[in-house]
Amino acid sequence: MKTRVLAVFLALILFAGVLPAKEPTVGPAVYNVLTDDDEAALGRASAARLAKEMPMLDDPVIDAYLDNIGQDLAKNSRRNNITYHFRVIDSPQINHIAVPGGYVYVTRGLLDLVQNESELTGILAHDIAHIVAHHSSDAMSRDLIAAKLATEGARIVGVSSDSAQKMMDDVGGPVAEFVQRPLKQEQELEADRLAVYNMARAGWNPQGMVTLIERTKQYSGDPTLISLMTSNMPPAEVRIEAIKLEIADVGNTGNLLNDSIFFQAAKARMLLLPGPKGK
Image (cartoon, rainbow, N blue to C red; front, side, top):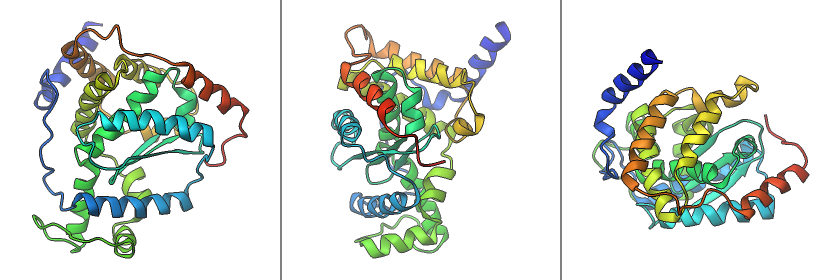
């Protein structure tokens, strides 16, 4: 036990630059050359490609429920001036995806794993935070600069639907860019921290983030189903301790929502649907 605690303590020291006990101020990304309009165009191109490459659940009740809680989080985020979209990928894989331009995806496998609404909103808030902080946009901008589709420090202006599709082709497409390519661990921790405050402002208990991380750590199912979500994350103990620091800074969470009848109704409806189509 002492060895584990020491390891967590040392890891927190290593990540100390992203762990002050107050909500982080999100500055401009280092490489990002995309305007909000550019991101929106690339997000639409990515969404169209993802719809072709991955099966979407397309259940009106589940879609409406997910969009309702997602929009509530989005309007309470630090980047609420763009339009957000929330969809369910009909796959048993346990994963979630944040795409520049405000597109957030969760898999059916992840919906099966979460046990209450605060766990689900923790995932959505984490992905919204990646969009708030321009994490994927920054990574994509590096690729665009490397492919000579942009110059460092210069913005791309007026990305059309056709040019967005070509850019996605030139940098590998949305599956390669946003699903297979991991973000930096310090970016994952920053997204966790931003998510805590976002959830609290929107009325959900950020403790759900902790319980879900603990559940993924104890996951005993097919490891290939959860590997994409966990492979590049910081150690679970580091994430949990970092989130707890922020929850302590938020203060009393006793009046914040943990669950709802709408979440449980959505879970019940999932049981009535045919099995997942995707792999």
